[in-house]
Length: 473
Image (tube, rainbow, N blue to C red; front, side, top):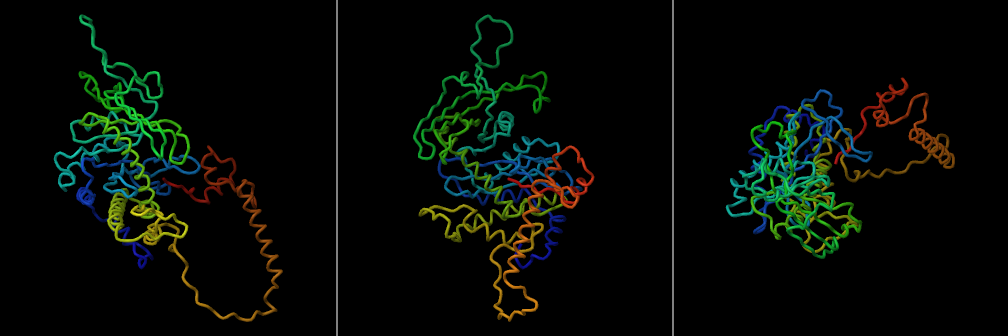
């Protein structure tokens, strides 16, 4: 990826198509490069799925429909989803520890992949000495799209904590009351109903914290321990033995209420969190959990950095296996950048805000973007010129103008103004969809949203314009 080899990169694609990477050894090396946590604080990890959309790869294998977020709304395009495992840290920097990127195969449950991604690093932490006996259990942070109860049940018995954001329509139950003596029938399994979006069903919390924050104003944290969900024999529980009752997975439900957001806006709704671990949640742990979940958003910055500057979605590969190798190389390259971040100074522009003394920098916005994008520019399709200032042009002596061939200055200005008005008129026609020279000028995105093109010329113009551009998170 050096600038001297921008011409073809054929060897890179050949190596990805015929090479081999030991994923387990690479993951252990990534874990060994993690910095040690502070005393009496758990190691924090985040898992999230990012899409690699490939709508133009017609013959690629093992592709599924992935959700791509963009300005015009969410769209579903063919591609490969990657489940990314990162290590998170406290502090003012958004650097993370890139550990593993695992592709979700067709028909594979992302909850099973998440359980495997949580279980495998536990052995790597013990083998590399990053976690010793007596240290707090590692903390896994997950978004609202993950089944909290299913993952907690699958990880039961392992020395790990799970912190999952909950959707506001979830319903939990407390322990049933004691059964009266001599009463017949099966005992009750669920107690008082606890709906997250219905405050009338909330009983008094077991833990309640209140404080004043400079960023959030008045802050209130409430925790209810011993709640569980009522499971049904569907989905992941469809194959559960019929002669056994479904399990009761108890955990702690946490609600965080703030007066304002850091930018001054009012929050739309209060976030809810689910915690499950080997130790019972106390006031100190609850105070740590809601703060730890804020670090999960560093992984969103990592996804954007890997795609925009490291070319995670730039290499258009036709093989799913080659995509796995490319994702592994990007993770390793990010680790090298993170380890070298302390060896260089920030390349701040005059308009960048000067950081406070002792404040560390983020991987974007401080000169890393221009330095890294120059290395990955050649892998991006349709681009041949690297970013940065244009090379200096040698000065040439001015030659005398020929009055017979050169137009006067006023006539040149009039001609440029006429060309500009023609360009603006054409742009307005393209924007409004009016026909130009008998052809339909509707965009490909608008045409793709219609069930059927009404005009034969419209079909020809839409097919000839190529695939619609897309943006990822």
